Length: 376
Image: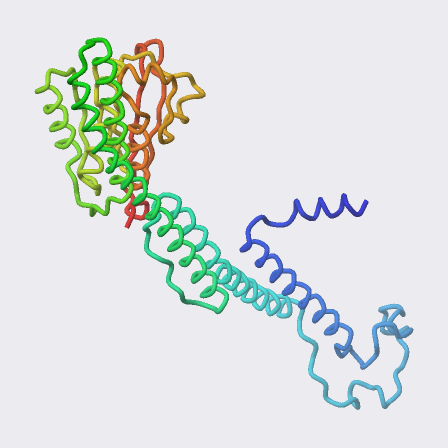
């Protein structure tokens, strides 16, 4: 029984800190008023100075049958007493006081819960941008301590990520020297089959090193946000691919958007190259609204299994190693695009085309227009 009551009470309690603080203050205010009213009515002066339980107060209301009061208790001879407060005035007084206290309790609960909301927002932004500005260390002692610890954690994570990136970049850069020697030595092989196999392996390793360095540079890019003409950027990208004989088209338009120029071009470039690799052609569609800009890249490839639509966004993930190796992919293009979109406060969403639209994959880059969602 106690466990059931405890579960019921837990379900009835508000889920937020603000709600629980407000409920606690409301209960305290109501309890204090009930207690005050009880005491007030208990000690309130009554007509003729008689308490409510006196036998004479229970008699008939007929004046002829009312008991005669002694001269000492006569209203004319009794000392002057303040008349009791009228019920309407009493209710109005209680209502005004209660409303004022409830409003003060609501303001107080909101004020006390605001630091927790600010910390939650900062933690959410930290997942998208590790280089976000640190929290201001102000407010109460507890708030300053929590902000200081949060800022220390952010600095430590940033240092660890920077150290990891430096290590991987150094190793990837150092691999270029032996790869160059291997490439030169394969030219001297007499067997054409072996020479072709060695050259293919060296080319794949060089592509992996280049993609890794590109991924690390993208993650550490401190490029500023500027007001960018997204439609002009997509037109330029389309013209560059068409000049190389590739089938790329662009339609739609969008108003200028705050974005990182090089990073956003790299993001869409990777999606277009992925579409060309598996579908031989790419169609870019721009869609604009008051809240976001959507860049969709369509291909005519085989598409992906539903369970793979989110997995392929992870670094170095390959749906099918043999197929990616044959097409020259190393599993970083979609991950780089996803990271760029996240730094813009948006996301990359993959979906398969429907039966009416034809086979293939649709990669959508969703970029919000709200400045509060952008990386600072």
